[in-house]
Image (cartoon, rainbow, N blue to C red; front, side, top):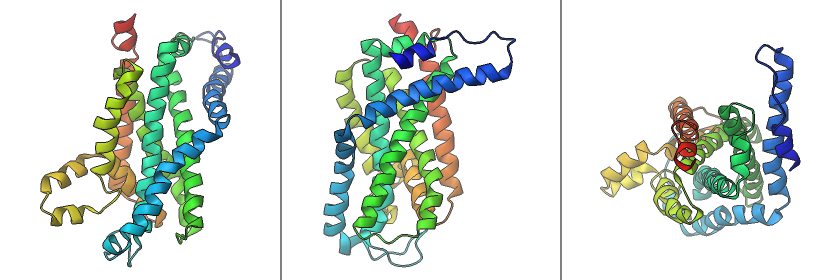
Length: 285
């Protein structure tokens, strides 16, 4: 209730100085982002549950496929790497992907319960409010990804800590793109019951048809060229590759460009969907 009251304050007049406007935006940012962070921190089980899935994949698959995928030298790797090293960027992307979809579910829930309606009537441009929701989702994803990196260190993944620190902005960029994707999907998910369909038709195909668990040359060797082409069109592939190169102290310009363009496009579609003249608010009144 306190957060909503902060947003509902009357904004400065159009001719007012920039400083009061910036203060007003900062208060709105603190209210929206702070609400999401406090809600997350008050539920420690949510952090544990978000890490169980990638941790299970990390432990089980790295043991089962250790001798299968640990014999190839592909960029950005300059030597043989263990499979757990290869799959680490994919699991970090998995965390951001599922958290982005969880943020989408939260938007649908808030919209049905009336909280989102109240936020959308706040005297601020709609783009700012959606942007603040995007920042909150990105912050939650980045927090979980950093915790998982520490877990990977505990499980024996050797790392150049300097490269890992340089990878933090890259992980934030990938998490922002996936959060924007979730924001866009929240426009078209009308009810909570439809979220299961989103899991089946969006999350799982994006994760499995990518380089998260296996290199594309392995798929190409099997003769599934159509699967390789789909993976190359999958934006999640570029999120994984961007993180993979960054963890090795390298920068993938193509992956970065695709992630930025996809993020801007998804956010633009989300902004259009929440436009009262064209999007969800017009359809639902």
